[in-house]
Length: 108
Image (cartoon, rainbow, N blue to C red):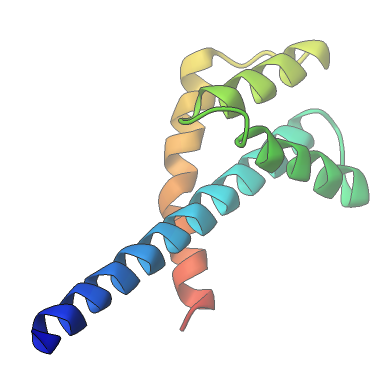
């Protein structure tokens, strides 16, 4: 029975680690998206970093990417920056592998 219990604990630990890694990847993607949007809005330095943090925090509102998308879409509109919905979503998708690579390099 202890072999089964050990395997179960191992699988649970792997699942928890995978979930934590995925959370970090999504947070990094959102930060990169926030920095991209900040640049489009003419923000730089501390202002850009602060804005990127608000994008990361917006992902805690609901499951999925819609909360992040709405935040960035709304902020770009307010700043008079024209980007199509598909361009924003495409950029979100483009940043995902970049974020994954960055997080994986940090965990090595």
